[in-house]
Image (cartoon, rainbow, N blue to C red; front, side, top):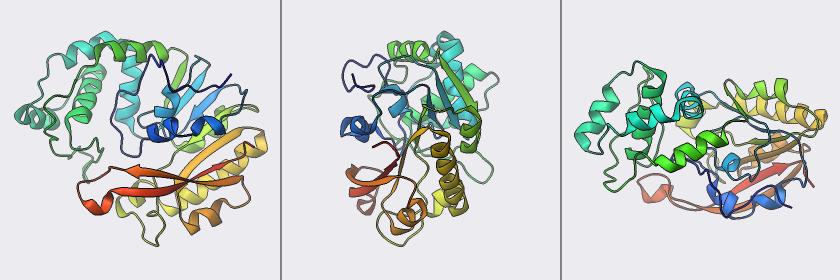
Length: 276
């Protein structure tokens, strides 16, 4: 029986996330999942669409270098009612959005509520901070959005019970993974799809040296006997960097990221895996 399902998922991703792999969950990730594996690891958590697509509640380890993001997951896991009650006090309006965006929170659960609110009411679900580390995405004018998603947040809280959440670099996965575990890696894309341009903003988040370091981590995971699935931009430099570490597949998807036509359209992406 497959470890991933596309139907009857109780807990669903609660964040809008640029680069989400929800399209891949719907369009063929299942064929790359091993029939049996032990624990699950996701070092670039983001919106967690792949994690939430699993049927079972096996032990999982979820990592990210976004401290606000990890706090949000942790608070939903531990204090979901407090998060929901905080969300219920917020209104979806432009004035309220900018008030909340500039406000400082005093408790972990109100920080989580603020993160969810801004994510769900911002422009395109982008997470972006300025040089001072302050969130600076404009209001999205999405009038009919459900800010609270009460029942889903409670389902997410339940789904996270067997999960260890870590604010850490992706290399931490090497200390937690064991033979027979599955590791899904979806790093920020360093290069633009199928051309020679580098993505300036993502390069600050995830440099080419990080990309090379990730390739070394993937090799070590494979040598340890772990299964890995890595997604990345379809680009010759990526193919060269990961050559010999597993099978490389090209898959197509449609992007709706960004507000300009040049950022929208069909793209090829790569899946690199040692699962045959």
